[in-house]
Amino acid sequence: MVTIVCPTTGRRVPTGIVMDRAEFESAVFEANVLRCPACGRIHTWSKQDTELRETPDAS
Ligand SMILES: [Zn+2]
Image (cartoon, rainbow, N blue to C red; front, side, top):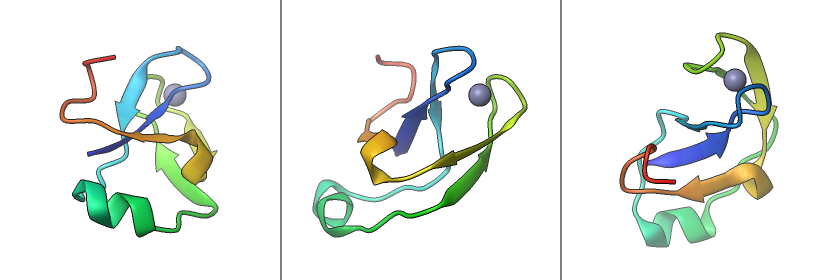
């Protein structure tokens, strides 16, 4: 699961994008938008904001 950190709450949240490590390494993410499950706002994120996690809560 590709995750980002919510800038409002500081919590790690899932983007809903599931991929394995190899796919993640070669993936390009630009100007993505997410309705945040932590705060309900819309966040724009790019690859530098992401981290690949087994579970989004294991930060
Ligand atoms: Zn948020």
